[in-house]
Image (tube, rainbow, N blue to C red):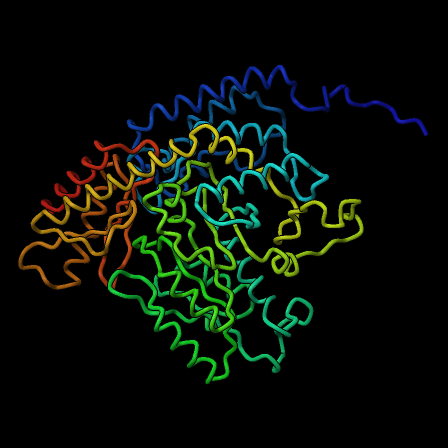
Length: 491
């Protein structure tokens, strides 16, 4: 059989756009990104567009003929950027601050160019081994003892799901991987535990794993919004007596609403006595341990079976990059490993790591590259100095709130998030205070310079100021406080 080369036809070149075009437009994209980052102070943090604006501005059908890259890139600026919420902006203080730093951005560009799939060692040896080395570096920066097995997932939601799947796999005699849960009466209903302040991903994991929302029991917290280890132990005893089968506990280091740190060591004591898997959600707060004087946040985490920390939250790494560590990689592997013939290789004797065995994803992006570049470009000292400054700025804001008449702080501020509300003298009705603070938040966000989010603490509406962006400095924190005061004055 003769194979004819039809890469060039009357329709033109059927290959990729040329590398010369890549050079030309790649330089243009770098300029575009640099110009965008340089302009963030002048842009409203929240997009000033109405729902459907972009959809209405785009054609309803795909292009029939090729379009010039110049035009496409121009349309990014014209159509896409105005509809973005600018997470890179120094005034972005909602949710948790994230930064796609320069080394991380460059790492993403290289990752896209290489387009490596790190599912097996042999499909990209460098990607697999760099992930192992980089995660061991990060382990050392966090002060965690080795050995720990680490792998990178997209988000903490996936990492927590995988950890709880491993915990389910570890239940003695349950054989859930093979036999499932449906229709079984021999093991009882499964239950796991987390504080009432735990992230929603912990509850979602139960939906996926078949334990259901009822399978998660929320544990009361103390006055600082930390899990009550005594209440946890009592809940486990009650559930065992009622026929439940407890199998895991999720502790949190840096809760979403208040950044409270659960007493992991005390929780680990309970887990060891009850033979339960301990997973620690340190997605946000774990990074603080890079700062020597903040290493206490991970006290007791050396006893956890698994732990997640997200470099894309407070370690200047572009989305997405979530690191799952475990002391028991063989259990995690047993929960997920499934190797069809077409994925077998001569390295399947466990002499190498095949990351496809540790989660549901087969295809895996080369996420380690950007994290490796971030760690090298900033170094341990540079990372610690930046995190320390964010914590200092939060403490400065907390002190201003504490010293201001008509304002109150609703939670401790151990890291870089401050929860506050206006409480004018003589206003004690909670619904009235909720409405007032909702108006204050809306007023600040409408101003365009800042974007804040809110939560509820013991039923009370709280404004959250989350500091963690590399571009945020003292003038921005003072500026948001001034705007909060001004919005409160307007009522």
